Image (cartoon, rainbow, N blue to C red):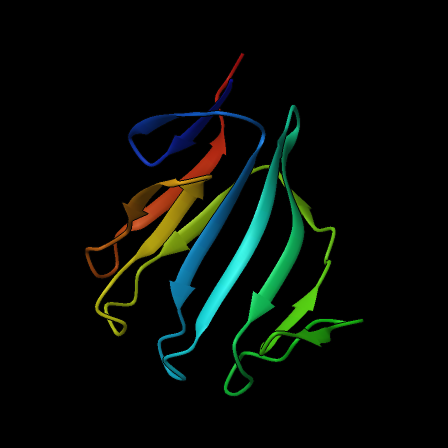
Length: 118
């Protein structure tokens, strides 16, 4: 089991992987990122978007798969800091397999996502 802090919530994940889903505030297009929890932080293993537009350019090496632009950034960060714009009508969905949690539904609410401290 993996422990992840998401704002004030402690989430027990079934494994080290989770996905983060949201709708782009301008283009109203779905964006999904797959993350891996590591001892030193988080690693972005895959990103995918349903289209392109304002601030939604696919990353280097992106390919189209089933209507999505998909690429593998490999970015590593100690934590994610998210702030809801209020322009999409929803926040983010953090999913661990079939279990999803909604985060950042309140406009301008800041959410920090990081591995739990040992």
